[in-house]
Every structure is written in structure tokens, then in C-alpha cells.
Amino acid sequence: MTLDVTLTARSGAARAGTVATARGAYRIPAFMPVGTRGAVKSLDAADLDTLAPELVLANTYHLLLRPGAEVVAALGGIHRFTGWGGHTLTDSGGYQVHSLRPSVDDGGVTFVSVYDGRSVRLTPERAVEVQGLIGADIQMVLDVCTTLPASTETIRLAVDRTASWAQRAAVRHAAIEARPEGQALFGIVQGGTDPVLRKESAERTVAIGFDGYAIGGLSVGETREVMLETVAATVPLLPEDRPRYLMGVGDPVGLVEAIALGVDQFDCVGPTRMARHGSVLTTHGRLVVRNAVHRTDDGPLDTDCPCATCARYSRGYLRHLLTVHEPTAWRLLSVHNLTYTIDLVRGAGRAIAEGCFEHYRQGVRSVWGA
Image 1 (cartoon, rainbow, N blue to C red):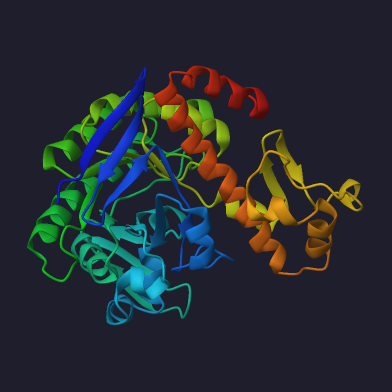
Image 2 (cartoon, rainbow, N blue to C red; image 1 turned 30 degrees about the vertical axis):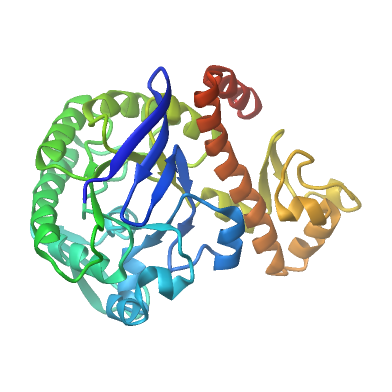
């Protein structure tokens, strides 16, 4: 299926609109919470219903190992399996090439399972097959993500392998029957921070033809400034009529600046990871709930936040839960942080539509720093 992108407003390169899918449609710009093992950590599907994200991301590598893609398929696919009926995207396992340091060759990737130590082989074709069984609305091609800084030779090899694997994935995706009708496939642009290799990777990926395009291999060691320069050089090389996805970015300034450059969707574990460590995002900046100053504070985390946590619980109570290691704290703070992040990106879309995006962007920068 070719995803149908309808743009309803622009502000410079920034875009707002909808992406039509076989399931329905989702709004852009959009932030995707990360549900690595089929759940956003500490949250359930009812929480997601309340948060109402446009999409949720699940991790192919982890679901392949536990419980197994065939098990997910037997239990009705990712939507029935998780109880979440909204749009879902599965990554391909490419990020684990960066994070787990597997054996990589021209044919694919060989991992050592983080669960039981067994050897697991993932090829571009197998990644497509596994994601077909899992049944998300959007699947990603297997790619090679390199840690930065890296040598030109290392990045060149990643670009070549990613392009070769993308072609193989596209062929397998077109042929496979064991996947949901209309399941989309996104290609991924690599190239590190080298503008020449980024351009080459984008051109080779676009030439294959995908339903959407991701900018990968960033937020893996480089500064935000360098990351944004790379995004700025890459976005114009991607088709206007396809979704553009910046992988692994979720800090407030990074989000609004990437939206300003024309990016449509994002994912990041940051908001929920911060929550589990007692740190929250607010309209006034970062708040460390564990700090003793909040011990007898009866106010909410953020008086401007509409989330259920802020409506009901005090900073003092949430600090208490954290200090006694009560897991309930992870859920309540995660609900808050995801509300903030989803609303931040959704607010950027409204600002684009209302013609005040630049003012909105500068407001975020003033709170979180340039």
C-alpha cells in the first residue's frame, strides 16, 4: 500500500496533515511512544486509549525472541495481542545492530539472544517475514545503524549494506502473503553525518520506492546541532508525498527543530525512561521529583498539564512513591511525560495550522534552551 499523505498546512518546511493507512489515518506531526516488548513500560492499553497517541512503536527483535512472531500471529497479531487498536509501527532490529554489537555481514545480522544466549539470524527477508507475522500497520526495512563518531569506511559500508538490504526487503515485502493487507514498508536513510553519503543513501533508498522514509543513524553520539544539520540536508531529498520519520529523537527542542525542518513523525524511549528515574517534563522545564524540596508540596507536577496524574496527585505523594520504590510511580510519571511529549508535537501541528509555528518553536526553545 502507498500511504496517502494529505498536507493541510505549512510553515516554511514544517508540515501538518494526515497520513491515510489501511487502518484509517493518523495526524502529523506525531510522536510515537515506544512499546518495546508489546507494552509501553508500566502502561497498559487503557492508558494508551487515554493518551491517544497517533502511533505506538514495537520492537521486532524483542518480539521475535519473546514470545516469538508466530505466537503473536497465533494470538491475533500485534493489535489483538496487546489490546491496542490504534496504529502500530515495528522497527526492524536495525537499532540493535548499533546497541548490541552483533556479527554483521553482507547477508544479514547474527545476534546472541539477550534472553537465553542462543544465536539468532536476521536477514532483510526474515525481518520482513517476522514483521508480517507481528502484523503492525507499518514495518521498517533492516538497516545498519553505526555509532558515531565512525570512520568514513564504516559509514560507507553501512550505506551500501542498508541499500542492498532495502532492495531485498522491498522484493520480499511485495511477494509475501503472510502479512496484513495494506501493511506499509518504510525505507531508512543512513550515512552518518557525512552529507555526501547521506545524499547517496537517500537517493538509493528513494529509487527503490517505499511507502515512507526514515532518517536513521542519528542521536547515536553526535551533538544536537550536528544531528539537525544532517536532518536539514536529508529531508529535501525525500519525497513530499511520503511520511518522513526521524528515528530515536524525543527531546523537546530536538522535536520542534526537526518539525521545522519538515519531519513528520518521531519515536523515543526518553519520556518513559526519564519517568522511571523520577524526572518529568513540564511547561516550565525539567523537574526532578525525588528532590527533597517536593516532600511536602501539595501541588501537581505541572499546573498547565491535562493528564490524569496532574489532576489527582501531588508532587509530595509522587516523591513518596519514588522513595519507597513503588512501581505505581513509574506509571503515573510515564503518563505525565507522554502526555507532555504527545501534546508538544500535536501542539506544533496546531501552531502550523494557525500560522504561529515560529512563535511556538521559540517558546519551546526559551523553556528548554537552544
